View 1 (tube, helix red, strand yellow):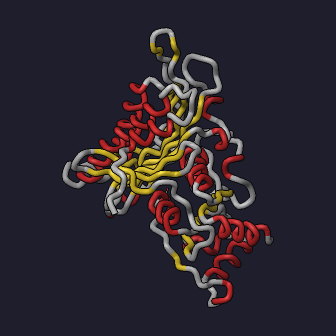
View 2 (cartoon, rainbow, N blue to C red):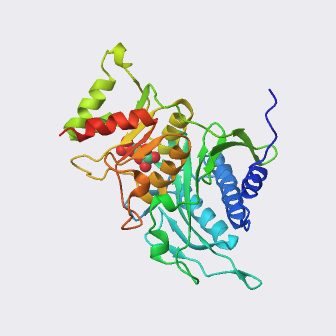
View 3 (cartoon, helix red, strand yellow):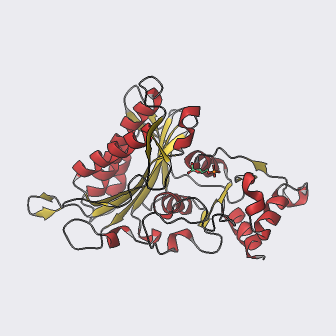
Length: 337
Ligand code: P6P
């Protein structure tokens, strides 16, 4: 079956036309992100050849080894976002503070009405092993009136997102995004350099047979979580068990598989890290927006991810995300003490 030849830009413009008061700024911004990620994709695919593999010898704000590609992805995105003219602030996993951006104008009309959070290259610890990695982004409208963006502009609840998405650099480069009207996926055709529509209005199965969690942390989990995962592995056919375990250790890869096939991804808090490892603003929130738009669910185990009020740019949250009925079931076990 010949799929519709719809480029990402054509799709974004068609979506924009559904909003009568749209100025086209968000469309431009999404196109700028896609362009930056095409450039990143080129380097990810060539990294081994042009010595971008390995580490820079520096550490990021979290004390993690910065891989050369991490730095490259961060710099590429910041440069693309700064020239876009549509942002008043940029926040990145790779920088401790947000980057305020001076307001730009089109004639008298002020631009720069958005702020963006991104994880420039999530899963980067897997780069040298050629495992799929990804860029995750989350876009909000500014709350401040004018001038460079403020920290308050950056610390908004996930329910305020106007767009979110990820780009996964794997056997092919795929971009998945939402602007609140469904979730749509595009595959990069490197011969023409265009993202072509491949998955329109993605819906995640309500129930799955797959769970994703790092079981190496089992002894540090709560009693309820241990009971839940033990149950998932039990030989109880009437309850649809056992589930299959699938865990890549690269969030975008695990999430993308579960979005398409169904599944439950868990990165819980534990006795060593009560809030888990993943970050609210540039990992949990964008993926939560996407999964809810696809009919799934995302919670901290006790609270809807999108309703968490952020207190700082890099705050962590436990994350249970994926097929709705599986997340609900996990929440029931987590309530057991
Ligand atoms: P662990 C990769 O380092 C990452 O940030 C996510 O992409 C991934 O889901 C998670 O950490 C894996 O963490 O502790 O299981 O190795």
